[in-house]
Image (cartoon, rainbow, N blue to C red; front, side, top):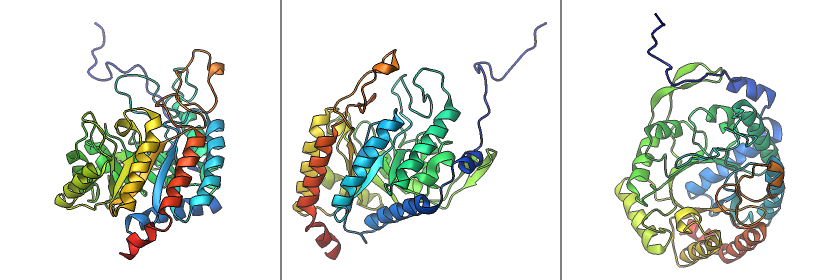
Length: 358
């Protein structure tokens, strides 16, 4: 008689990974890189607390698949950041994990070599080294906190975190966010509704207790203090864009009614651009004009940008990949990124300090 089983019936295999502590010992955050992360986080906290009049702008590729191209972009962004630092705090978008509506490439950590070998430990190593290289430039880094385990490996390098539209409603992600060391932006739901984001902000500011792992990789009960630096990100939805002044005013009312802060970030991509990257610059201009006309609630923006325009499918022969072109959502190119950000900074340079003074 064959042995009867009641568990792991659909599990092919389980592979043990190196622990978060082992990875951090191999690639420690220290010295100027550590100081860079701490300063960047504090800058964003100060912006959210209205102690710093600047806006913070999360800008970069939809996803990272090529560390060499990512560092090329990072060097460009660092130079641009120095030109606008008096007005805008630029944060590089360094997204390693991609939520999929059904199936598809799930990002550099999950499948770093883009060949369905799913060498996750190598993905964690590549991702951590890239983040170290970026923050060592003095450039803040941001990412989407998608997998509840990966922050133990990478979160010490992150200045700002996003919770995506598909996971804002998830209790797991709300609990995890309550313990993140960075500020965290919750996107509105995929339908464009704000209720899930408001509920998330109410939840994340409170302490939580949940199952997780510690730095030694042991399953543990995690007790958090609550994260006071959560805010909403308007990204549009199935009902259309929500970046205009009418939607922003409605968002302010919903946040006030929910008893949470009225800090609003505008995602210029996704449903706010109808997935057309060329519209992102128009969204940014509209947001700039709202601030010129007296808006007080918008504290940040997000742009999907790369070295070159558009996107590409992942080819069978990876040698055919075009350099600096997204393999997920289409992005604006570097020239348009630089032009748009410089223009925004010029228009807002004398206006933003008055918002704090008022």
